[in-house]
Image (tube, rainbow over all chains, first blue to last red; front, top):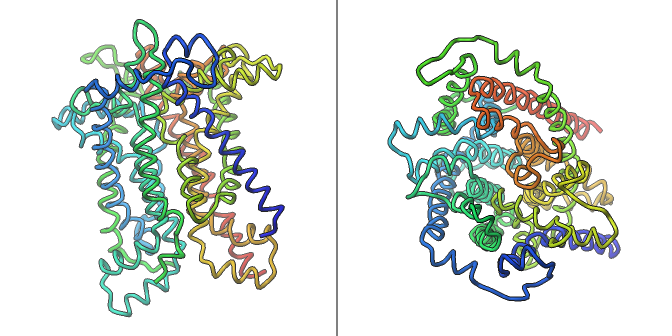
Length: 270
Length: 294
């Protein structure tokens, strides 16, 4: 790679990262300030450093249980999404069957309806099933938008793998499940990593459905956060602290799947 | 050509069941509401296509639809090229790669209502970094007073929030290109641009299709962020379709018209996605034939 081109890329990358980080920095900055300081003065860093905002979250059970609830249903949702999407994506990428194109596109159409539309029907459905305020209800509801996404992402990656690999494996006497798990999935690690991250992310930040389907036992952090708007005005500091803490689990997830994303095909070759 | 195998349905069935469980019933409910006047839970009158006609005649809706189309188009025009460029610039190996991946992904992980709140402060000229910087540069900036600036702020917020989605998809797509392609290109003495145009871009087609469709449909349904940031104002400069829908369904509690609106909304997204999808598939296939013949 020639030098000037390399530099241009690096400068562009750094410029973007600054653009990306500044609002986040402002949130972190706010989370260490008192409400008075946030609203009255412009300061690049907290003048009166305070940890009270974080203390509120770590000592109040309704706050920290929000994080735990979110993690539980997001984990269930991501696991189910990937488990059902992997074989389906393989079928779409490798075979023709009755109505395949229609089903493939229909899946995505489920992401095209404003979530507000689903609230009332979901409320009625899960009340009838007696599953209101459970983690599994939210996890199932979020399958609506995560499964189609996972299928589409995984299909894209699987179609990039030459079909000769499948055929060679079958000739070598591999059964379908063994081939799929030991050869094929390692080949599309990058896709699995990306799909897992996106399922995690979309489920993690979804507010409307999660709030409608829960009240106490499974109340997610995004819904707890809306409490910071109260009669006495907005509690900006606590909201910022809660926002900072919502980034942490996702950052850990992306850190763990980064190898799958970054290595992609090169490391998974048979 | 893919071999025909009807047994492949068995692999697809779990997905169809999972999604149908959540999708069919709400859709039926919405269709049901859209043709009735619900005066109270016990009293309903069948009104046929009345609501659909009323919604189609609504001037405010047409205004919101035009604003929405302009916004979604701008989102695609900015985020897709920027996302591809970012993916190409991201380091592929080592700790730098991990660090950049995490930094890039952060904005995606912030709950949407917090995104709006942060930008609300961030853009204020008295206490926010961006607002204060713009003011220091002598720009009269106000996302609550100036319609154009409000619109641009919402766009900038969306670019900040969602470009990483495009970048991450493309980054993973780039990593999935086998080294052999690059080796062949360097033997041929291909330029950087030729490598991008004839190897990277065609190989990214799958992930780009997902990125374009996702960004299109999600930006078409954008609600929380502009609602928190500007409340749809000033005037209705940033009132997009879903905000208008929510005003109808929740604010005025008109379930019938809101349901009819939802269906029309859904059909618009469906139609536009279908056009985008087919167009991108055709472009992709044309590329392939060009590559084999040319």
